[in-house]
Amino acid sequence: MAEIKYEIVENLGVLSESTKSWSKEVNLVSWNGREPKYDIRDWSINHEKMGKGITLSEEEIRALRDILNKMEL
Image 1 (tube, rainbow, N blue to C red):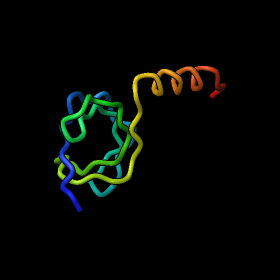
Image 2: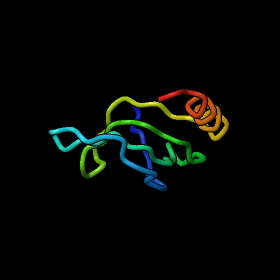
Image 3: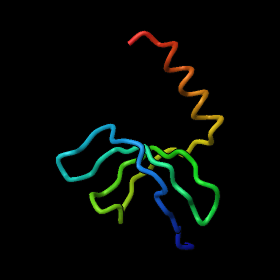
Image 4: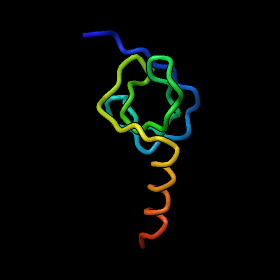
C-alpha cells in the first residue's frame, strides 16, 4: 500500500478527547499535496497516528453547517 502523506494546515478545534490520549479534531488537511480539505477524525496526541474519518470540501462543510443550523439541539 502506498504511503499517505498529510499536512495539517490548520487545527480548527477539538470535539472530544479520549482517556487514551486521542482526540477527535476538526482540521484543514492537505492529503498527498492536494488542496486542503476539512477533516474530522481521531488523532493521536502527536498527530503521528490517525483513525478513520471524513473529509469534506468547502461546499460540503457549508452544507453540513446549514443542516446543523436547522436542527434544534
